[in-house]
Amino acid sequence: MIEVQSLTKVYGGFRAVDDVTFTAEAGRVTGFLGPNGAGKSTTMRVMVGLTPPTSGTVTVDGHRFADLPNPGLEVGVLLDASAQHAGRTGREVLTLAQETMGLPRRRVDEMLELVSLTASESKRRVKDYSLGMRQRLGIATALIGDPRVLVLDEPANGLDPAGIRWMRDLLRGYADRGGTVLLSSHLLHEIEVVADDLVVIGQGRIVASGTKASLLASA
Ligand code: ADP
Ligand code: ADP
Image (tube, rainbow, N blue to C red; front, side):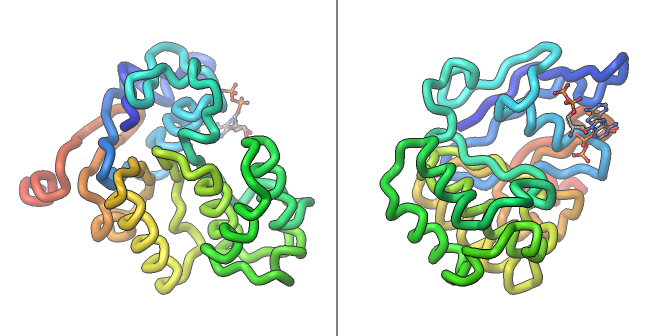
């Protein structure tokens, strides 16, 4: 599981994330829901160590994220797939992750197969990929180290309905095997089918959290 405690991120006096506390449990899919600008990406960027919090802590199975010896092996991350690695090929992106994490080379081909990127597609540069292909490559990169926790920012962006179903099944299977999944969206319908729990954020603050059943019943 991954726990966020009293997390605050201030940009030049603006509280983008304001005293946010929630837990994403193992074996469950947690949907992180809120409109654009609510603070989802900022929270996730802090959670995975890309930017320091102003205050607050993030722990993975009780260990502070900052103290994990190889966070890439424990937490798989997909953030802003539209912007990453434009000049590299898909295969190069995965190979870099494989080498950085000290994984066997076969993981690259296993991941390409998992996300249905063909050999010829894997040799094209990411800047020539569709957004859906970038999301699938991002999912492959997040999963390559077989992490216990997945943090995915708007992974459904750019996927067609079949792609969204594919991802839903993938994440469901991953959680059913004991993994922790946190995925964000600004659209309830994108995550309500797959999410077990929901954390709702607005203007940097948590406005509701709990099981999907309890939240949708009270909505
Ligand atoms: P979401 O992911 O929910 O759309 P973000 O976390 O991207 O929201 O943004 C939350 C708020 O913080 C927005 O008002 C955004 O403009 C602001 N923000 C995000 N990153 C920065 C930054 N690096 N500097 C200043 N403001 C930022
Ligand atoms: P930090 O200082 O927390 O590391 P940065 O200032 O490096 O954050 O910005 C992180 C990312 O957010 C960058 O890609 C930056 O371009 C982007 N960013 C900056 N200002 C904003 C903003 N107002 N809203 C959304 N994103 C922003």
